[in-house]
Amino acid sequence: MQLAFDADVEAFRAEFVAFLDEHLPDEAETVQRSRSSSDIPAWARRWQRLLFDHGWLLPGNPPEFGGRNATVLQQYVHAEELSRRRIYPSFNPQGVGIIAASILSFGTAEQKQNWAVPILRAEMTASLGMSEPGAGSDLASLRTRVIGETDLVCRDGKWFLYATIEVPEAPVTDPVNGFVGVDLGIVNIATTSDGDRTAGARLNRYRKRQARFRKRLQAKRTRSARRLLCKRGRKETRFAADVNHQISKRIVAEAERTGRGIAVEQLGGIRDRVRLLKPQRAMLHTWAFAQFGRFLTYKARVAGVALVQVDPAHTSQTCSRCGHVDKRNRNRRSQSKFECGQCGFVGHADHNAAVNIAVRGVERWGEVMRPHAAPTLTAS
Image 1 (cartoon, one colour):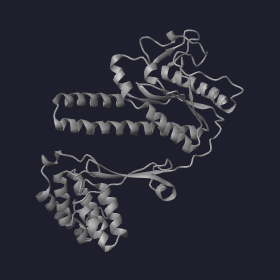
Image 2 (cartoon, helix red, strand yellow):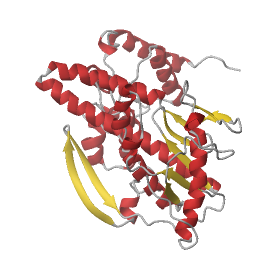
Image 3 (cartoon, one colour):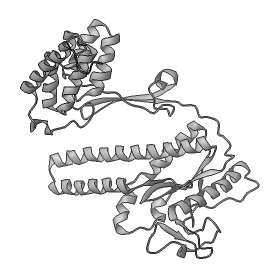
């Protein structure tokens, strides 16, 4: 059994180690890190270009494309030495490892020189736009679906193509197994009747941190501070949209998997109905509840999941076990605790409310399907 590399592999390693000892970027210079897969700091661009010019960027490539036709074992020791020094060959992994590699494999000679080489030499960055398959945003739909209005937008020096497509709605499946109730809140953004809670602690910490940052920038009153405020505002909007997408996607997927519908409290007037302490008011008014409702609605339509909105009145004060309604059922010391004064049931307040919403969802579905046989709930 051979436990050592061959002489040619060790010679390859020694040559690369000597190169690293001579050219490795200074540690103080590498403090500046990449902010995204397509953002490369100046020092990282110089480092990637140096590796390319000396054939150490992708050693398995031919010399004209940043390599030296290295064997598999030579490529292994190359990665091993970089790992020991905790440095990447490139801070544009999607561009180098996917896009440039694809062009080198399938592109023409002209495409390789015009696109692959600039990406490999860090003269150009490239990244992939990830999408959500089956929900109307996947790129393959642009070829198979009817395209509506399309906009080309330039934002912060980058170009974006916004294409609207028509996605057919799946036929609504009868919720034979009942409904998933969804209770919305501040501490927990969304709680389902299954007991799944999307804890808002991390989200609220993020929002508080952004609020403090905005306050400091507003105090400066400079032009650069205003530009940064605008930029940070868009970042917060994207963050909230991403969270709403994730939550709504999980809820719809679970309802579809279990053959149930979705019952959610009526979102209209939620800011007027909810009574909160002063520190929590900013959180309520900055979270996009209406956006969450839109995301939940369109994802449910695409999946063919029944969705109804119910009257949320007294759902947090009603016992899900015995039906007793009393505002004293909510524990005054801990708003997260529900304790029924009649049957003694104790549970999480948001889960209890979600169960009540699920029950009302069944009632509401009966009204929708048989309007002549059921009374109409009045909205609060």
